[in-house]
Length: 573
Image 1 (tube, helix red, strand yellow):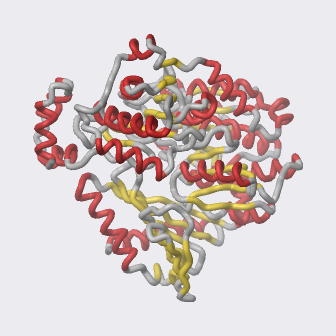
Image 2 (tube, rainbow, N blue to C red; image 1 turned 180 degrees about the vertical axis):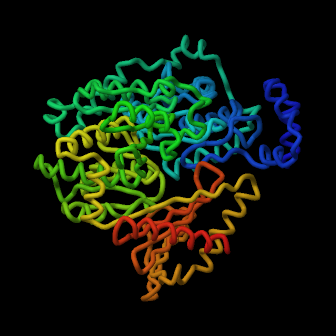
Image 3 (spheres, rainbow, N blue to C red; image 1 turned 135 degrees about the vertical axis):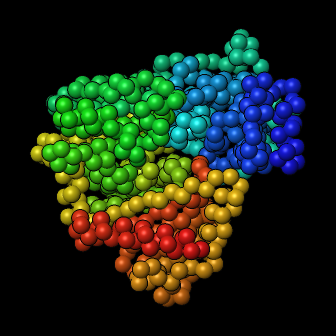
């Protein structure tokens, strides 16, 4: 079926809502029609993500229904009486999409546990394990702009579904007709028949209790937590209640919330791009800080799995730390605290992604612990937690990725900004007793381990043509790998699609024992590297760069020059 046939089918289908039909009829741009119907919205290992609109390549109740029908078929193939937990965030249509998923599952005989109001993504991960359901769904598009929403699927271990499970679910989704094969029933009927149960606050309490156990310097928190001044912004998302509940529970009572960003709002009126990586989301918090002089500012994204930290750089200047910098600070803090408490072990392992800073490696070496790399995506960190528990060979102490995601503990299997907020507050309190803020603590680490700097460039490439261009660029880099960048030799090429690494100087080849992914990494003789990969959730190509400088100035100049050289290289492909 070509895109025009799909478009006409939606216009003539009785089951399609009149408002969506009107939306489709109002489209005047042929390219827009093509983009909405040239394919089905792709179901990958993270589920679905796309713009909220009518069309087979968009997020709407029909694409949600089709995906859920495929998931129901998968679950029923593997278990006689499966169950699923569902949560949703503050985005537009999140509740409607959650209700639709519950409706389809119940109609297929799958027991549903549904949160009655918004919750963070990591709480869904916890709930799957706590209620021992066979899967979980959370409706969120994380930090994407307001036009987007998403549908993430979790396995019974609380982690995002494996590649193998996603592939099988996709086969059932593809086999289902979006209108004819999707079963539905009202939520009222589902509840009456015992197929739907609303999740109670007892699950919240169980989660909060587990988070509390992750504090390391408990005596310090008990004695001085109330002295730490915090400004927090939920950025119109789901973190407001759980983050403040945990901080208050631990004694961090001196917390001011950015009122303009406190309440849930899917239009994100003060933050068009509700991403804690973007300094603009902290403008209101920084204005507050000029009046109240807090020790710490942080903000969580709409589904509260990412957190950004702002620190005072000088008398009148505030700096948003990068995801790498917060991860480095937390890694060192956790290992240092474990050493102080006498619980540090050589089996202790920090897990990070291949695009995340390598600065943590000399830090781990200093403490006699380990670092392990995984593919981009927190699901792979979650899989390592499961593996460590099964083999006992490693002890998971912390996992993080450069995109502002952090996790400690094993009762959640995804990045968790509630947990991170507690650890960051504890860390800031500790350094406060040492006469430092987090910026000064980070500077000390740079002086000790080297001035590592990283950066990320995201190149927007919309539609079918954009996706084809991304694939062409990466394929060309694979087939014509650069021999040098800026006069520095490339010494190692890692191809995660072919699962091979090439030692260029020795002419040797070795296997990469990670799942396949269309990612290329190039490592240079001076320790710098860059990675090129397609985004898994947005129509973008992502380019990561990393360097090691002699000092602050050298690192800043070096990363900018290296980024420019890599961009020129990529653009010429």
